[in-house]
Length: 147
Image (cartoon, rainbow, N blue to C red; front, side, top):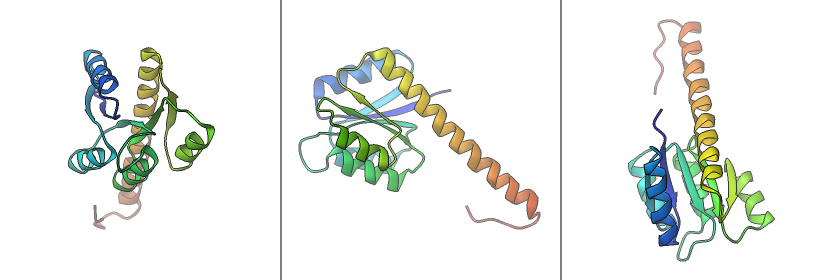
């Protein structure tokens, strides 16, 4: 199991530190410092889990970025990160499809546990889709399905 993670945070020190620590733990991790860069990265490559800061300076905030991520990669699991936690922003993020949220500073072990759970959720969803496709093939043998 190789989990592919994208970290999106405009706090460069936090971004570089979390990337190093996750990679050292064996989790394939890259990072970007803006919502716009995250969208471009997600267009280029699929990620299993995305750690996304809610409050970022510049154009797209975390909620705008979450909406675009879910439009482009609906199965990617998003964990919202915030140092300015409000109930409203967390609830809004969860309604838009975020897997979970974490208040900064978070314990590294807790963050790794949430990443693992988010990855398992993505794998469960992928498995259900594969099974549904197999069920259709069995139910309608000889029929070709568009992918």
